[in-house]
Image 1 (cartoon, rainbow, N blue to C red):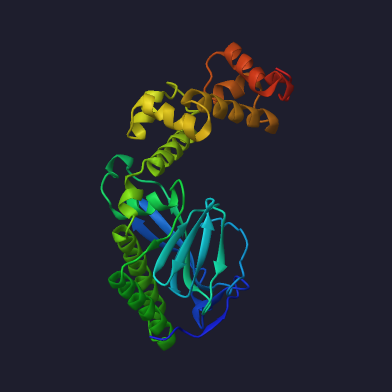
Image 2 (cartoon, rainbow, N blue to C red):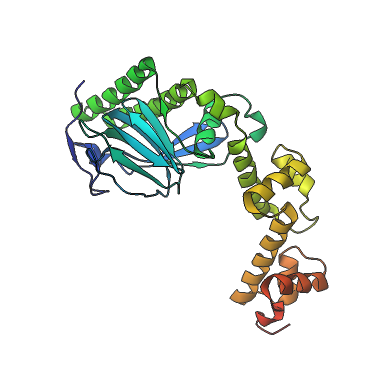
Length: 319
C-alpha cells in the first residue's frame, strides 16, 4: 500500500501525520504488560531530513519507539553510529541523546510511538522473554541501538500500519476504537519482531538493563518505605523486594548511584526531614520522628554532616 497523505502535526510543528490523525492523537491509551502498564501518548509519522542533513542531538521526555517504513540514514546514540533503513526499529529511552543523519535517496519516514511505563513488575520472573522483559531490556539498555526486522516481520508490521491508515481513511463507525486495537497489536508485533531480530539474544543476556531495573526498583522502594513508622527499612527487606541478594543489591546501587543502600536511605530520610523543617510543618523533634529517626542526637549529627548545619537552623522555633 502507498504511504498515506501526510500533513503537519498540530501538536508538533515539523512532524508529519496521516491526514485525519489529528483527531485521535494525544489520547492516552493504556496497554497491560504483565504487572506493568504502558501508556501510549502519541502516534505520529516523522519524516526525517534529506541527504547530508541532520536533525541535531535531542532528547524526549518519554520513551519512543521508531519504526522506519522507508528511506535510510544514520542514527547516533550513546556515542555510537548505527545504520538504519526500511524495517529498522529503534527504542529510544527517555532522556537519551540521539540524532539522525539522512542518506541519499528518499527521506526516511518512520512511525513514532511516544510512551511511558508504570511499575516494573516482578523482576524475578524476567529470565523469560515476555513482552515486559523485552521492552524493559530496550529502555534500560546500557547502549540504545536499533534492530533490523526480518522481511517476514516487516510485512506483518507494515500490514498492521496499513490497517490503521485504512481505518482512518474510511472513518466508519467505531474507527477510533479499531485504530486503538490495531495500535495494541502493532506494539505486540514490534516487540515480537524485535525479540526475533539478529543480535537481540546477545543484548537480552547482558545484565546491564536488569541491574538498572533493580537500582530503579530499590530507590522507588526507599521512597515508598523509607520514612515509615516502626521498624526501619533494611537492606535485606529491600533486596527481597528486588529479587536479589543484599550484597548484590549494594553492588548494583554503588555502580548505579555511587552510594550504598544505607547511604541512599539516610539521605532520603534527611531530605524528607529538611523539607518538613523548611515548610514550617514540624520542629526538629517532629521532623526527626516523621523521617523515621528514633534517636534525636543521631539525627542531628547526620543532618549536620550532610547539610553543614544543625537542623535547628531550618526549624520554625529553632528547636
